[in-house]
Length: 368
Image (tube, rainbow, N blue to C red):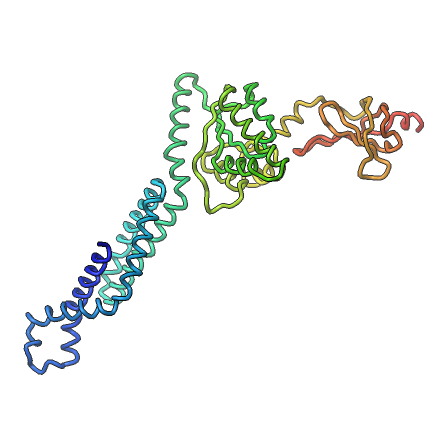
């Protein structure tokens, strides 16, 4: 059936072209010599027949390719998500509207080639760009119509009840989910607002959980267990963001993009992602910063009793740890490995990657 429709379209197109141009061609070649083809009533219809036959014969081999193309295009449209079709179509419509207003002044110029060719080219070009923009930015448009509307409604309800603005949504990355401490933080109600789990983060967690490496597989399953705990057992509103940014490959880059789109806050313990967010002016909460903030405060000049566990990177250094895992670098502490000694704190270095304490043996201080 589709093949017959394509053939009929080709015949109609050929007849139309013959009706418009073949009479002029006959008159230009002057091959009629006063015959009945000179009649203005006969020549157009002869042109229709000739044009239909010529175009049909010339494109007879092309019919099967056109049918296969239409079938492939139909299958693609049927399988495409509704959001893709909706925003792609809206983009095409907007492009055609813009092309119409731009083409009108061009057609009024009166130059035949320009007034016929340029508007057609402009229409096709803007329709293509409109489709690309609508299709590739569909996640952002969809989010603006759904999530932003939902947050606005919640904010309005909250302002009516309390007069306070709702906190921004928190977007979790893969590392902070696997880490697991985010669940304990949510349980203590220190993390306010809605928690967003992007679909592409879930896919990465599932990929890690299906890994052949035992360590990665355990980390992925731990992350999935943490999410289940947060969604079922904790007093926090957890929502799944279904959208994706297919033009972006890296998950971290998608997180930054999503935070910009929905005006959210990225929650992570990844030092590099933390720096990228700061560079792109995206708000970020680093779990390591929170952990460091609640660690016991140690000031230079204080004395501690620590056990030197191993040697350090530099010569004659020893390494010890506090109960909370904070590393202490003991200068001239290599000789005390395996022993518990008193040390004097000399300096404290605190970064997003953790806190590091530098000290020296108190016995060495007394000797000096």
